[in-house]
Image 1 (cartoon, helix red, strand yellow):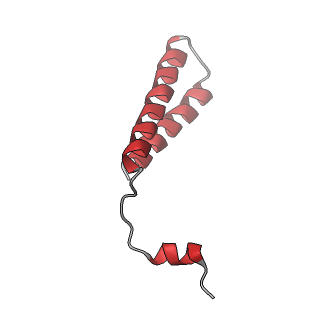
Image 2 (tube, rainbow, N blue to C red):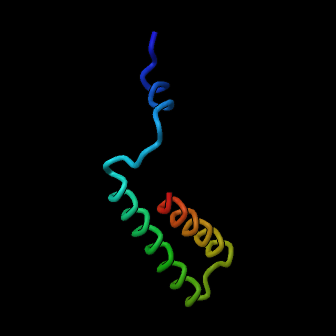
Length: 66
């Protein structure tokens, strides 16, 4: 018995056709988070929130580079 999702795992990894759209979306999301970081820093926001948002922005940037 073949299990379709396991067969997909064995295929070579290549960029799917939606990759450019996904990369643009991730880039946009990281920019939005960075804008919020700037705003929170300027307003004296909670340092813990800012730190978490910085980590999230870094994650989004890294994901966009895959």
